[in-house]
Amino acid sequence: MSFKDLGLSQALLNAIERKGYETPSPIQEKCIPVVLEGKDVLASAQTGTGKTAGFALPLLQQLAQRPQKHNRPVRALILTPTRELAAQVLEDVNDFGKAVDMRAAVIFGGVSQVPQVKAIRNGVDVLVATPGRLLDLIDQRLLSLSNVEILVLDEADRMLDMGFLRDIKRVLALLPERRQNLLFSATFSKDIKKLAQSFLHNPVMVEATPENTTVEKIEQRTIRVDKAKKTELTIKLIAEGKWQQVLIFTRTKHGANRLAEKLDKAKISSAAIHGNKTQNARTKALAGFKNGNVRVLVATDIAARGLDIPLLPHVVNYELPNIPEDYVHRIGRTGRAGASGEAISLVGGDEVDYVKAIEKLLGEKLSRDIIPGFEPLDPETAPEKKQQGQRPPRKPNPSGNPRNKNAGGSANRNGGGGGNKNKWRGRR
Ligand code: ADP
Ligand code: MG
Image (cartoon, rainbow, N blue to C red):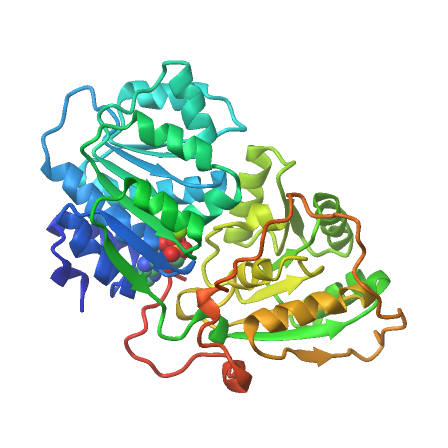
């Protein structure tokens, strides 16, 4: 299957080529023709499977083919849970949209609304937004959604996790009745199904699990080490492994700051990314990480949601999450788009129970290593009760994570890189 077979215009095919995509990902193959037909879509696919182009390409083609008003009201609305994700979706939409003369803009909170309002006034065909700022501008009567023809909810499960259900409902009520709806979600909880039923019309179900599921391509190991030695060990791993790009997770914002500072002192250029950082600082940190100026990005779970960091080779859990599903989301940052990756978890004496919970969710045992010179002395205790996370605990997803469906045994320790010729590759 090639992009040519999916019904896309020559202008978009050229843009796809410029972007360096050679073959469509499975979700793109399934999604693009259906969206082009104008149908509602309910799509389930993991992070890193190429959903953005899956909806952006056919959406742009549809808009380009239809008559356009000269004042360019918003005709497609893409809602995303986080600012970073919104910015990334905009980048993709712009890369493709320019080819068909479609204008896009992004709005999210935490920065001045002035340039955003100005962009809308100048006319935008596609608006990418987080729910809060969107409703804010609507309440100020600076934006109308009465011309929206296509609605996309990207990472709908994340939006619900982050408490956006009410905002989503408010937005839905502001849209014209007649429109096309696309809903993307990595998981299908009861709440997502309920939401989907509430506004999708006869949706086509699209599902795509990459042939090699993400987890299978990730080499996972845990290292038991005392809390007090974690920083030193992290520095050693980065230096000896000559890692050039590593994403490190901590449980708290404060912890992220502290670790980034210590790594910087050890001459490993680092930046922290979390909810207390200004939008500018976050964007700058992510850009620096992507262009190689920042070697280590230290992040909290929320900050890392949906971040598109292509072909990330190393993820370190400096602290384990108390919610096992978060572990899966974290390590999903590596081994994207067909590349293999390595996820290392540093396990303190009071985190052993977290490993057990994660193993239960994965349905497999993780390797447990001890590094010479870092032999643990701390006793193994129950996790501290203190709530250190930065969001209220959520109920674990009873259906488990579909990404782990095929995980099992030692089969997934081969590090990937198999000879599957059909595998689509991420940009480098
Ligand atoms: P998702 O939204 O499913 O998490 P993205 O749309 O962000 O995934 O895509 C993940 C990465 O793969 C991005 O870097 C994107 O540019 C790249 N990508 C998407 N589609 C293709 C393709 N057909 N060929 C190569 N790379 C692709
Ligand atoms: Mg996405």
